[in-house]
Length: 81
Image (cartoon, rainbow, N blue to C red; front, side, top):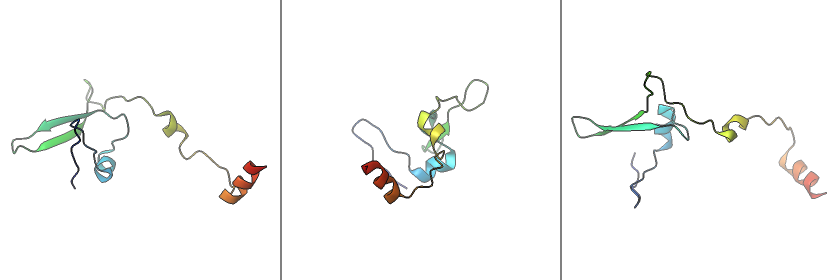
């Protein structure tokens, strides 16, 4: 998998990699270069060896909570009145 470096030196970590590592918005990461010159990325660790605490995403807390059984056309008809 490849990605492109921006003029600011930023890259996007591909979604399959983020998913495999459990990286979510706000997750701190560490970079290192191994003996072979390869860049390695790890979730950042706190002093106690636990994953670094991140600020909870206010939208993530609400994700998947809606239990409205309306279909789109029914909702749009309701909003148009």
